[in-house]
Amino acid sequence: MAMASLSPLARALPQLPRFGFLSTAIALPAISITVPPILSDLWESVLRAVPKKKTSHMKKRHRQMAGKALKDVQGLNKCPGCGQVKRAHLLCPNCVKDIKESWKSLQTA
Ligand SMILES: [Zn+2]
Image (cartoon, rainbow, N blue to C red):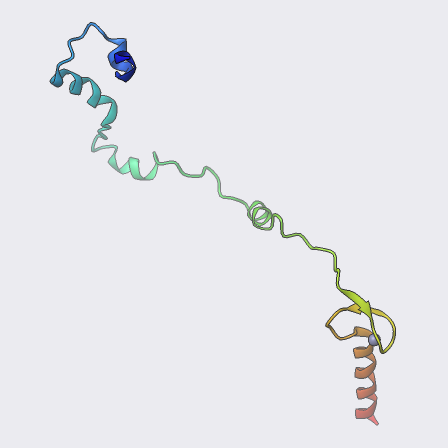
């Protein structure tokens, strides 16, 4: 039970005496990363994880338009004026065209 609570490094090196100053000396180099001053400029610009290539317009549009495809029109009914099929709650395009033509003929006459 006591071995389970120890760190993997302490289990791998059981012959070392477990003094406080020695255990901190072993544990610290694995945690702290010291960047040399010459590499400090490179650390910000090059060594960070960045995309390798620019995402193309097509790829970006495909990603953003996923699941937004055109759907079939469900709300259809019959026009009471001419009897053609039209979308519900919208003007019948056939009747609108007839009205526009009649208005044009009135203006010219
Ligand atoms: Zn109509």
